Image 1: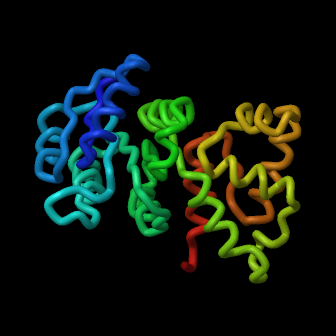
Image 2: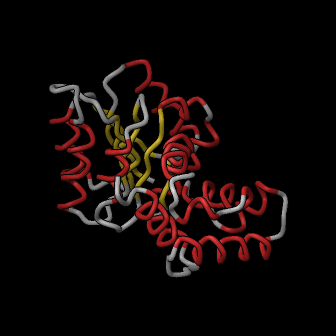
Length: 217
Protein backbone atom coordinates (compact mmCIF):
# COMPACT_ATOMS: atom_id res chain seq x y z
CA UNK A 1 0.00 0.00 0.00
CA UNK A 2 1.52 3.30 -1.16
CA UNK A 3 1.55 6.14 1.37
CA UNK A 4 2.33 9.86 1.19
CA UNK A 5 3.22 11.16 4.65
CA UNK A 6 3.31 14.83 5.66
CA UNK A 7 4.72 15.86 9.08
CA UNK A 8 7.00 18.82 9.79
CA UNK A 9 8.63 17.42 12.95
CA UNK A 10 11.56 15.32 11.78
CA UNK A 11 11.61 12.84 14.66
CA UNK A 12 7.87 12.14 14.42
CA UNK A 13 8.02 11.92 10.63
CA UNK A 14 10.92 9.48 10.78
CA UNK A 15 9.16 7.42 13.44
CA UNK A 16 5.96 7.23 11.37
CA UNK A 17 7.92 6.16 8.32
CA UNK A 18 9.59 3.34 10.27
CA UNK A 19 6.31 2.27 11.88
CA UNK A 20 4.41 2.10 8.60
CA UNK A 21 7.26 0.35 6.80
CA UNK A 22 7.34 -2.26 9.57
CA UNK A 23 3.69 -3.02 8.75
CA UNK A 24 4.32 -3.45 5.01
CA UNK A 25 3.34 0.03 3.83
CA UNK A 26 5.41 1.62 1.06
CA UNK A 27 6.28 5.24 1.84
CA UNK A 28 6.47 6.89 -1.57
CA UNK A 29 7.05 10.37 -0.08
CA UNK A 30 7.66 11.79 3.40
CA UNK A 31 7.43 15.59 3.27
CA UNK A 32 7.43 18.48 5.71
CA UNK A 33 5.51 21.34 4.05
CA UNK A 34 2.25 22.15 2.33
CA UNK A 35 3.73 22.77 -1.14
CA UNK A 36 5.68 19.50 -0.98
CA UNK A 37 2.53 17.65 0.07
CA UNK A 38 0.46 19.13 -2.75
CA UNK A 39 3.10 18.14 -5.30
CA UNK A 40 3.46 14.59 -3.91
CA UNK A 41 -0.29 13.96 -3.89
CA UNK A 42 -0.64 15.21 -7.47
CA UNK A 43 2.36 13.37 -8.89
CA UNK A 44 2.47 10.09 -6.96
CA UNK A 45 -1.24 9.17 -6.70
CA UNK A 46 -0.87 7.30 -3.37
CA UNK A 47 -3.31 4.76 -1.96
CA UNK A 48 -3.60 6.84 1.22
CA UNK A 49 -2.27 10.11 2.62
CA UNK A 50 -1.33 10.56 6.29
CA UNK A 51 -1.24 14.28 6.93
CA UNK A 52 -0.50 16.61 9.84
CA UNK A 53 -3.08 19.42 9.96
CA UNK A 54 -0.51 22.16 10.60
CA UNK A 55 2.34 22.40 8.10
CA UNK A 56 4.70 25.13 6.89
CA UNK A 57 4.55 27.74 5.56
CA UNK A 58 1.39 28.91 7.39
CA UNK A 59 1.39 26.47 10.33
CA UNK A 60 -2.42 26.84 10.48
CA UNK A 61 -4.38 24.20 8.56
CA UNK A 62 -2.07 23.93 5.55
CA UNK A 63 -1.98 20.13 5.62
CA UNK A 64 -5.75 19.77 5.88
CA UNK A 65 -6.38 22.20 3.03
CA UNK A 66 -3.86 20.41 0.79
CA UNK A 67 -5.58 17.11 1.51
CA UNK A 68 -9.05 18.55 0.83
CA UNK A 69 -7.85 20.08 -2.43
CA UNK A 70 -6.37 16.73 -3.47
CA UNK A 71 -9.70 15.02 -2.70
CA UNK A 72 -11.53 17.54 -4.87
CA UNK A 73 -9.17 16.75 -7.74
CA UNK A 74 -9.24 13.02 -7.05
CA UNK A 75 -12.59 12.19 -5.36
CA UNK A 76 -12.33 9.49 -2.73
CA UNK A 77 -8.58 9.86 -2.13
CA UNK A 78 -8.16 8.27 1.33
CA UNK A 79 -6.85 10.81 3.85
CA UNK A 80 -5.99 10.31 7.52
CA UNK A 81 -5.42 13.64 9.27
CA UNK A 82 -3.36 13.95 12.46
CA UNK A 83 -3.90 16.82 14.90
CA UNK A 84 -2.45 17.87 18.22
CA UNK A 85 -5.86 18.91 19.60
CA UNK A 86 -9.54 18.10 19.08
CA UNK A 87 -10.98 20.45 16.46
CA UNK A 88 -14.50 19.55 15.37
CA UNK A 89 -14.15 21.88 12.38
CA UNK A 90 -11.49 19.61 10.90
CA UNK A 91 -13.76 16.58 11.25
CA UNK A 92 -16.63 18.46 9.59
CA UNK A 93 -14.48 19.53 6.63
CA UNK A 94 -13.19 16.02 6.08
CA UNK A 95 -16.68 14.54 6.16
CA UNK A 96 -18.30 17.24 4.05
CA UNK A 97 -18.26 15.38 0.72
CA UNK A 98 -19.77 12.23 2.27
CA UNK A 99 -17.57 9.89 0.26
CA UNK A 100 -15.71 8.16 3.10
CA UNK A 101 -12.07 7.18 3.11
CA UNK A 102 -11.32 9.74 5.80
CA UNK A 103 -9.89 9.73 9.31
CA UNK A 104 -9.12 12.21 12.04
CA UNK A 105 -6.85 11.14 14.91
CA UNK A 106 -5.08 12.93 17.69
CA UNK A 107 -1.31 12.51 17.52
CA UNK A 108 -1.41 10.66 20.84
CA UNK A 109 -2.92 7.71 18.93
CA UNK A 110 0.31 7.34 16.97
CA UNK A 111 1.94 5.89 20.08
CA UNK A 112 -0.53 2.99 19.99
CA UNK A 113 0.94 1.29 16.94
CA UNK A 114 -1.85 -1.25 16.51
CA UNK A 115 -4.60 1.36 16.71
CA UNK A 116 -2.80 3.75 14.37
CA UNK A 117 -2.02 1.13 11.73
CA UNK A 118 -5.61 -0.15 11.93
CA UNK A 119 -6.86 3.39 11.28
CA UNK A 120 -4.59 3.83 8.25
CA UNK A 121 -5.78 0.54 6.77
CA UNK A 122 -9.43 1.29 7.47
CA UNK A 123 -9.21 4.70 5.80
CA UNK A 124 -7.27 3.29 2.83
CA UNK A 125 -10.07 0.75 2.35
CA UNK A 126 -12.62 3.57 2.09
CA UNK A 127 -13.78 3.47 5.70
CA UNK A 128 -13.89 6.11 8.42
CA UNK A 129 -11.65 6.41 11.49
CA UNK A 130 -12.60 9.16 13.93
CA UNK A 131 -10.74 9.81 17.17
CA UNK A 132 -12.67 8.69 20.27
CA UNK A 133 -12.15 12.10 21.90
CA UNK A 134 -13.85 13.84 18.97
CA UNK A 135 -16.82 11.50 19.29
CA UNK A 136 -16.98 11.97 23.05
CA UNK A 137 -17.09 15.75 22.65
CA UNK A 138 -19.89 15.53 20.11
CA UNK A 139 -21.85 13.17 22.36
CA UNK A 140 -21.30 15.30 25.44
CA UNK A 141 -22.39 18.46 23.64
CA UNK A 142 -25.76 16.99 22.68
CA UNK A 143 -26.54 14.92 25.77
CA UNK A 144 -29.21 16.28 28.08
CA UNK A 145 -30.36 19.12 25.83
CA UNK A 146 -33.66 17.56 24.84
CA UNK A 147 -32.44 16.12 21.56
CA UNK A 148 -33.07 12.47 20.63
CA UNK A 149 -29.57 11.55 21.80
CA UNK A 150 -30.75 11.99 25.37
CA UNK A 151 -33.14 9.06 24.88
CA UNK A 152 -30.35 6.56 24.28
CA UNK A 153 -29.56 4.04 26.99
CA UNK A 154 -26.01 3.89 28.40
CA UNK A 155 -25.32 0.75 26.33
CA UNK A 156 -26.66 2.39 23.18
CA UNK A 157 -24.37 5.36 23.78
CA UNK A 158 -21.41 2.98 24.06
CA UNK A 159 -22.40 1.35 20.77
CA UNK A 160 -22.93 4.74 19.12
CA UNK A 161 -19.48 5.94 20.17
CA UNK A 162 -17.81 2.84 18.71
CA UNK A 163 -19.97 3.01 15.59
CA UNK A 164 -18.97 6.63 15.01
CA UNK A 165 -15.30 5.66 15.31
CA UNK A 166 -15.83 3.43 12.27
CA UNK A 167 -16.23 0.06 13.96
CA UNK A 168 -18.30 -2.68 12.34
CA UNK A 169 -20.97 -4.57 14.28
CA UNK A 170 -18.59 -7.52 14.61
CA UNK A 171 -15.82 -5.31 16.00
CA UNK A 172 -18.22 -3.62 18.45
CA UNK A 173 -19.51 -6.99 19.61
CA UNK A 174 -15.95 -8.14 20.26
CA UNK A 175 -15.11 -4.95 22.17
CA UNK A 176 -18.22 -5.16 24.38
CA UNK A 177 -18.11 -8.97 24.68
CA UNK A 178 -21.66 -9.53 23.44
CA UNK A 179 -23.15 -11.21 20.38
CA UNK A 180 -23.24 -9.53 16.99
CA UNK A 181 -27.01 -10.04 17.01
CA UNK A 182 -27.25 -7.96 20.19
CA UNK A 183 -25.26 -5.17 18.57
CA UNK A 184 -27.50 -5.27 15.49
CA UNK A 185 -30.49 -4.73 17.79
CA UNK A 186 -28.78 -1.83 19.54
CA UNK A 187 -27.84 -0.17 16.24
CA UNK A 188 -31.41 -0.50 14.97
CA UNK A 189 -32.67 1.17 18.16
CA UNK A 190 -30.07 3.95 17.81
CA UNK A 191 -31.03 4.71 14.22
CA UNK A 192 -34.71 4.72 15.15
CA UNK A 193 -34.20 7.11 18.06
CA UNK A 194 -31.98 9.42 15.99
CA UNK A 195 -34.38 9.37 13.04
CA UNK A 196 -31.76 7.96 10.65
CA UNK A 197 -32.19 5.42 7.90
CA UNK A 198 -30.98 1.96 8.93
CA UNK A 199 -27.91 0.88 6.95
CA UNK A 200 -25.70 -2.20 6.85
CA UNK A 201 -22.95 -0.24 5.10
CA UNK A 202 -20.40 0.60 7.79
CA UNK A 203 -19.09 3.75 6.12
CA UNK A 204 -22.54 5.16 5.28
CA UNK A 205 -23.85 4.66 8.79
CA UNK A 206 -20.77 6.32 10.31
CA UNK A 207 -21.21 9.35 8.07
CA UNK A 208 -24.91 9.48 8.90
CA UNK A 209 -24.27 9.33 12.64
CA UNK A 210 -21.54 11.96 12.52
CA UNK A 211 -23.67 14.21 10.35
CA UNK A 212 -26.46 13.95 12.92
CA UNK A 213 -24.19 14.55 15.90
CA UNK A 214 -22.65 17.59 14.26
CA UNK A 215 -25.96 19.05 13.06
CA UNK A 216 -26.95 22.40 14.45
CA UNK A 217 -23.53 23.18 15.82
